[in-house]
Amino acid sequence: MKNFALIGAAGYIAPRHMKAIRDTENALVAALDKNDSVGIIDSYFPEANFFTEFERFDRHVDKLRRSNHQNKVDYVSICSPNYLHDSHMRFALRSGADAICEKPLVLNPWNIDGLQEIERDTGKKINTILQLRLHPAIIALKEKVARSATDHKYDVELTYITSRGNWYLNSWKGEEAKSGGIATNIGVHFYDMLHFVFGKLQQNLVHYHSQTCASGYLEYEKARVSWFLSVDINDVPEAIRAKGQRTYRAIKADGEEIEFSDGFTDLHTVSYQEILAGKGFGLEENRVAIETVSAIRDSVPLGLVGDYHPFLNNLRK
Image (tube, rainbow, N blue to C red; front, side, top):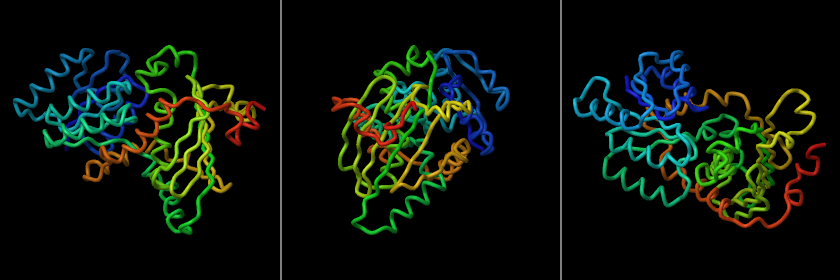
């Protein structure tokens, strides 16, 4: 059994990590969050030590390490705001633990180089949650693409609308310097998936980029991708909203829809199983996706959204 510490215990995604730790029969011994609304821990690890101050959490983890206590931390799971991931991964490795970090790994590709140096210095490893690479539907698509003619490029449409309330732009997620912007915050998994399935990225054009939505064009070895991301409820098709749904997700390859909604929430546990077996995704696997979102963030929009994404022809109708 391995001992885990968790940073960002009050966050939206933290319960999936708690469940994965429990389901892989390991222990959460310490948790940190500046917010104390963490009663969810009672459903998983009520005996875990909880801290609201990083300094006290740091001291606790360090004391366990120095005394070689039975609760010495083996892994630090990181669910903190995006801009803190780099620092918290460094803390994990310097504390003698491996890290498991939520998306996005970092905000800028050069941060990966610095983390690789710390891996070499400490002998510890950074693992990342790239759960779409483990989804059966995505694996099947990758295999299909691999079997296709070498000169065939798929025409892909990616649309992801996950509506957020007024709180969103007033939180750290609405600050580009902290979240990386919409493409980084909600799109990085999809860009990683596209690279994983369709190969080397060849072109990256941004057509529109704002706080609440973005669109553009990506070309890979085996695909031409038109993409659109939004957190605006008004971008969810009216027929979908009428059913009470606030999210719309669609990926089409050569006109054929790829359905991968089922099983999404269980992929964190699968990710943990792979990491514990020594088969986790490391720093380098993240590089293309981080380069992609960094370039999107730094690009100057070239035109209007409606000119560039087929889905938008019927948007809000």
